[in-house]
Length: 65
Image (tube, rainbow, N blue to C red; front, top):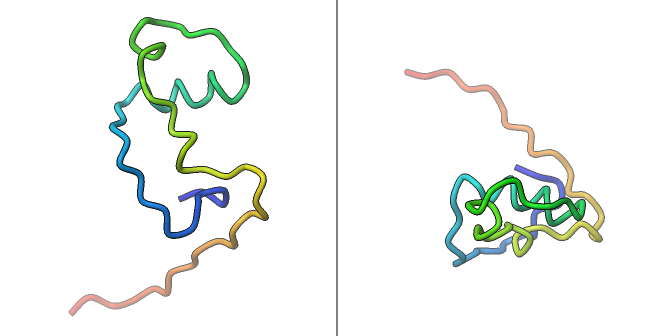
């Protein structure tokens, strides 16, 4: 999903749609747009932006029976 996802990491944090917005706001030090994203969890526990980016996962095309 992301080249900066932590390998083999399973998050037990509860997220919601506003968590994506909260991630951007937190990462780029932007103010919250609404109370909903201000209170949301920010997804930062599943990314490591300091790691070497992971290579893309290329799936092979297959035929359905």
